[in-house]
Image 1 (cartoon, chains in turn cyan, green):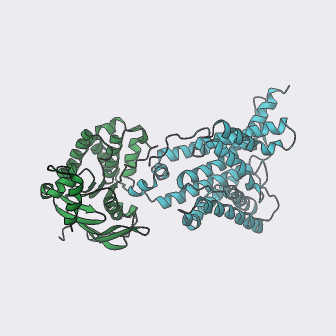
Image 2 (cartoon, chains in turn orange, brown):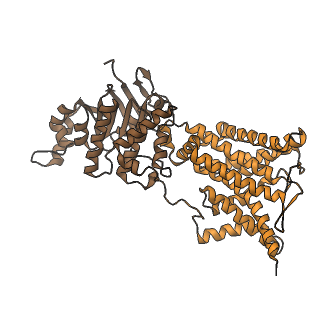
Image 3 (tube, chains in turn red, cyan):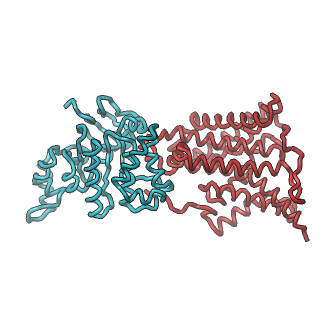
Length: 293
Length: 257
């Protein structure tokens, strides 16, 4: 018999890992909803964001909070330019072109990061590294806790932004009906680039939050595969769905690692995905109103 | 006619290799309602899309208040004061009615003016006020049309482009919407370019009419004169004397141009 503390421990660890998956999935979903493109370089943008934060904090000796904020801004600007300079050109091309382009960009980012920062794992000191918090007998790593709290805060900020601000509502409008948004005088192209900027910023934040748990290295972006599963589980189009899908994958993965023989942990995301596709192919939170043609 | 608000000057527009408009010119004076009639595929929607900048004409000019807007992107055209109510309404289905309306005023910064225009829209269409917190996708077709028109009004246009406002609505609702369109025109001094398949109501609402057939204008006149013409009455208003329509249609068609 396991004790309850053990199980809670696994849940918290899983939820923390799941939040990271969820944040990357959120980036997938934001871009997909707006432009119907799937950005397979999302995980690699997280990696770049992590390295930028590493440079600012560890190399230039910035304060953690200042450096993290600056890294998010830099990565967001990078996302904006990526859309404005590269991806805008493939709008209207077949989906396959977009898939190949973003996969290719991922390769370029990894190579570029390897050349710039090297292929060794790096890390920087955060206020959460190697600390624990005692919550009524339950010992939780401060790093894991910071991931969960950070994700929740980001969700609140994004929710307010998308529902209460003019720009956020315009982003929703442009995602729902591009042509009508043009007729309203909404600068749709700039809005789409801004959505890329938000996705990249969120990815960077995921990289920073993840850095105390696992180090930053060139291949950390490969966890985006699990995020992709999380996004599909959530319904690929739903923002809360992507986060809950991510947390689900994270928790199941933790339990699989604890209970099942070695190796199973790595495949659980895909097993959950397959089960979801069999039981509820539209995902957890599919928006079922469809587009009017 | 130098006092035109909008002057479309022999535009030709293509969808890829297919020419949808084969040289169309039309004028809209300030405060006027002008209608463009025509069957399916005549090119009516294409004319509006060319004006609002979604499509670029291959040749020809579109002058709005003396400025050539023919190759401008649609968001800039809108900022000049041309608001487009697209065919099939094209609301933002997951936004509330109120948010949809606020999107119509996206380019404006005068919050007092926006608030008073919102009031104005609710005045014209009280149904929208009742449903302002509902998602637009849950509205009925008629309510969505009201929303689409109001959303365009929120942009404070000097020229309103209306594409088939009667599409899919009950005859009673069509009457209501057109009487409000008339009121908007006289009360707000907005010029309207109205594209319609329902020729009877369009001719009764508008001041001046153009008849479009496969990309060309085949008739242009005051609506009263148009309504009195035999060919218009027969082909567009469905009134005919006795006789077999199919054969006569072909004979008569030849006589145009």
